[in-house]
Image (cartoon, rainbow, N blue to C red):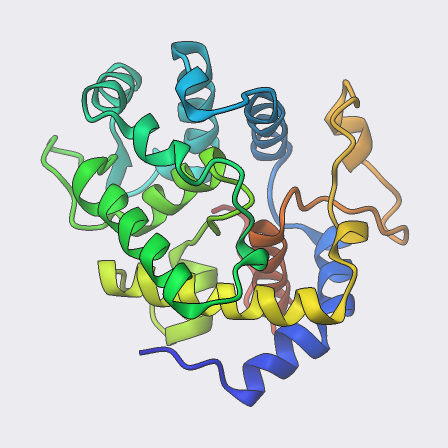
Length: 254
């Protein structure tokens, strides 16, 4: 079980400003992943509740997850038609609607966040597993795809997770499991509460969705900081990535 140590508090809370600025100027990810991410979140913000999710939006989410690396592994994301049909058949929108406007850092009680984490873990591993083996069978590895899916539907609540950055940071290995999904979610919640008490996080978040060409925004001078994280969960994901990059553990794709 993860316990937020003094060392992690120092790395991710005390060093928050230099970490997020380093990430903003040195992000290792390609423009396609940013462009699709931006478009998806912009569409998500136009939905007043989860029951407004339609086929067009689900296709966009699926396309974004592909650019986030979910079609390039031993386990791959299910095809678009299966993705949409399973989402509808399993009534995932009914589950998501309960958390539609929730913000991770606003929860103060451990019991409350534990209930949410338990229910969303059921979505990832039981009710809506979206990763399959290349032979078409259900994959045991659902953490990466499931967390990235939920992040795009509940961007202010669920942190995206991956093997190389997230699992390595917290565990020192790339193994995944349902328990690890829950433990990391809980750990990132604790970090979000600590950050929210210490910093005005809004100034570090990108929120100008009026911009038409996101690529122009991202092609900024390397010396000039501009916020590129769209929510507190993504902000924490970014500083974890930044920490590993600054320690020489870089990677060019999710």
